[in-house]
Length: 132
Image 1 (cartoon, one colour):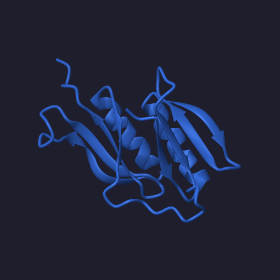
Image 2 (tube, rainbow, N blue to C red):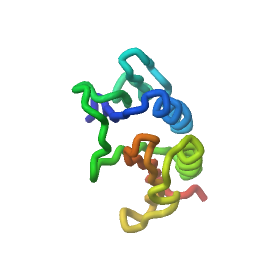
Image 3 (cartoon, helix red, strand yellow):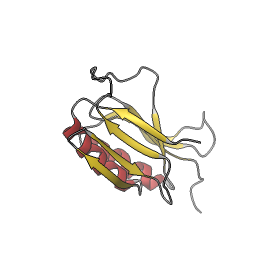
Image 4 (cartoon, rainbow, N blue to C red):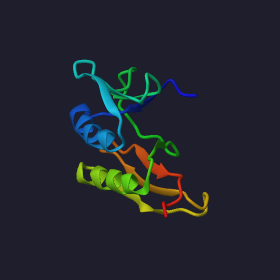
């Protein structure tokens, strides 16, 4: 469905450090980094799409986080949600909702919400039931 998602940032080195810590927790490999532009991308597996990209806005205007915008990453298990949330907070993220079940979405929805170093809202969610 998606070709790529682009997340705007202002402080590229700070944001790059955040996403370089977070994406391996989710099993997503860095595909490229061009600090001179600046932008970087991570590739889904088996790939090559969708891509997650971070960078400064192309129009040269300052980055502003969107109200009501959120990028949600899929985790294969609840432990990954927990690790991703902890990693995000350890690398400058801000908690927007700790890991836990959210039965108002569905019986097995386990998610965590946080902001990256630039104020962009992110989620990591697992939709699978807890193994027996």
